[in-house]
Amino acid sequence: MANFFPRWANWIPLKLLLIVMVLGAVVTGGIWYYFTPKYTNVGYMPAQPAPFSHAIHAEQLGMDCRYCHSHVEVAGHSNVPSTQTCMSCHSQIKAQSPKLAAVRASWETGTPVQWVRIHKAPDYVYFNHAVHVNRGISCHSCHGQINEMPVVYQAQPLSMAWCLECHREPEKFLRPPSEIYNLNWRPASAQEQLAMGAQYKKEWNVNPPVTCGGCHR
Image (cartoon, rainbow, N blue to C red; front, top):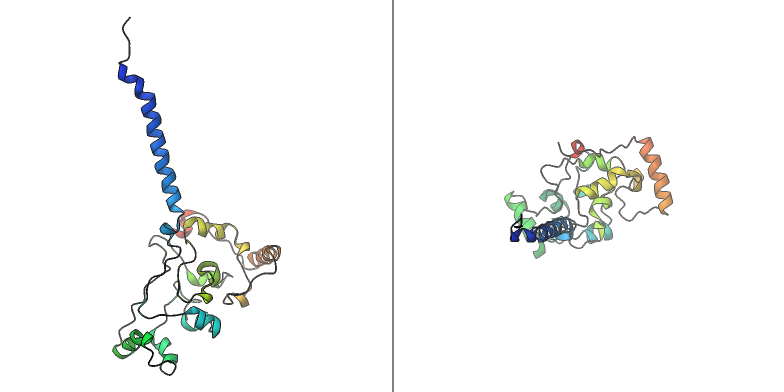
């Protein structure tokens, strides 16, 4: 009796297995790449027109974040300080430092310094800065220990999974209003954080969205 299937059909199971293995490797590689610092920009530290050390200004000198980022409590986006803000000090302090050449040129010409933006949500993501800081989320939660950075870099992935971690359990991150801009503040223990966070979550009616429409508008 003649064979019903041609001889090449014997290789079909092996070929299907090979295709499944290749597709599995591609999917696994894509998911792995999604969580790597290269994709999330963790560690991104671009060169700026003028060097600025948060370690000096925020940590050593104790300057409040709101002195330079003056709109964080009232605006959807945190503002980059204007040249006037810089020159309110540096017209007298280190006024002739070569490191501040770009700032002085901006002051003289009226052209803003072209700072390189580091933290930026995609255009399809809605994020309101004022809402977060006014409901117990510190600068530290998103920007890391920025007060100790001689050069600013992106400390957190700012990915959807990372955002949802906080939205699903905000009690792990809420802190007293008086400590929002104190980047060195820490709760005494994890238990204290959860108890305090649960209290603030209830008192402030904190109910972050976890559905697509909450952030993708």
